[in-house]
Length: 75
Image (tube, rainbow, N blue to C red; front, side, top):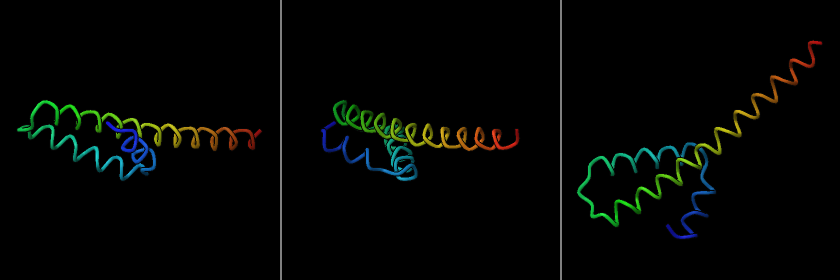
């Protein structure tokens, strides 16, 4: 995977990364590609999955922060 592809994926929002990851999985499940193409697609899928996880981790932190602030307000 090229650096420009990694940089591009880093700009994706959650929904775009998720949708592209779904497409990558479908393509890999269909098979019919040579090994190099399959590996390149796998690498893209890994990068997309990592991007999704970054978004989910950020959302999780925001929820935890909001809940902790709310809990502090009730004391």
